Length: 93
Image (tube, one colour):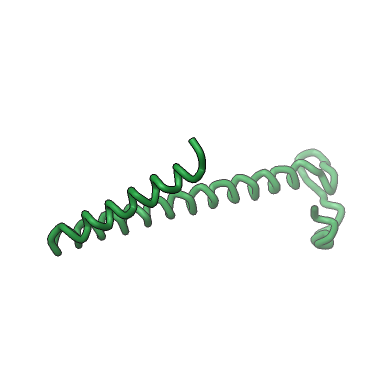
C-alpha cells in the first residue's frame, strides 16, 4: 500500500468522523468531545510517565556507577574518603 493511499484513508476517516459529530445532538457531541479529551490526556500522561521512568532509571544507574567507584579506603568498618569536597563538574562524567 502506498503512502498516498494511507494518507487518503486517514483523511477520509477524519472527515467521516467530523460529519458524524455534526449530525449527533449537542449532548452526545459534548460527551464524545469529553471522552476524546480524556483519551488524549491519558495517552499524553502515558508518554510522560514512560519518559520519567526512563530518566529515573538513567539517574539511578549513574548513581550506582558513582557509588561503585571508591574514592577513599576502608579501615575495618570505617570509610575514610580521600576528600570531602565534591569533584569538579567536568570530572564527574
